[in-house]
Length: 386
Image (cartoon, rainbow, N blue to C red; front, top):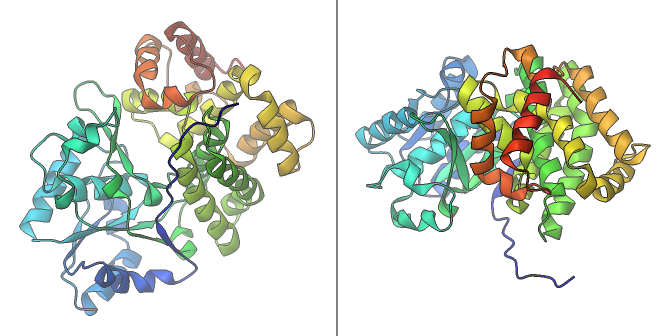
């Protein structure tokens, strides 16, 4: 094998540990943010915990304001309203706080407040990101409250297109947060169902990054250890939400997954994006349901790698043992077996397949499925035909 030229880049500063949210104002000041816009979702915005965090930043002398018009599957309108709030408050940086939606919209506001183009003109295609004026992108401090998307270390955000309902990946290297605060105390209140769904999102990131067919040994190693942390901690975090060790390890595994997937994602995401856009379903839940169907479909290309991963994870039985572990983990933490269990039908499989073919994640799948194959795979996910 001739090793190709590749670029490796992992620059986010991670501040890990219980109680480290207390450092938020300090990190803002260190990066020249004196008037941060605190971006989160409406559910979190009403919590006493969040009000206390905002008050502490105010007491540190910063001119903070809260923006919380963020949908679970973010749309362009959320960005537009956020940019208005950013400009009206004369803000100079963003605190992106929450799950994937809050983090992504926070990053999009930091990106778009100084641009004169549509956010969709910065989709992750070729070098479209160069269309943005990088000098106008605001600094970002990211604080995840779920262990799933890993958006706190990412250079992209996902936004649903208002007309096509496609989930678009918006990319710019300058929206990678300056600092990410990984405080497990902030995830303790996450309900078991969401802990499970976001955890499966983290597993999908690590798994697909590990299986992607590109040369990136750093990502492969990170993804493998990320899977081990999830294997050892996800069920614990679901069953006992106050377990700070399990919560902390899941936060790290989540960040590892998003760090690793610069190597690529795959058909799990290529399918979950259109299903999420068309049915407004939870992204992590979709990934968890779809996962074993895609793993099985990719078998002829990934069996050796999965057998190696199974050995590292202490799973007996090679590829078959690994697939059984995924199914057992899903059952243990309450992830349904098929998409019909969460209200998704087979009426739009043609649309799903066409959208999956165009999804940027599809390019990282070990096998380049045809539209017909995607439609067949999507049907199996709906009906439970594993």
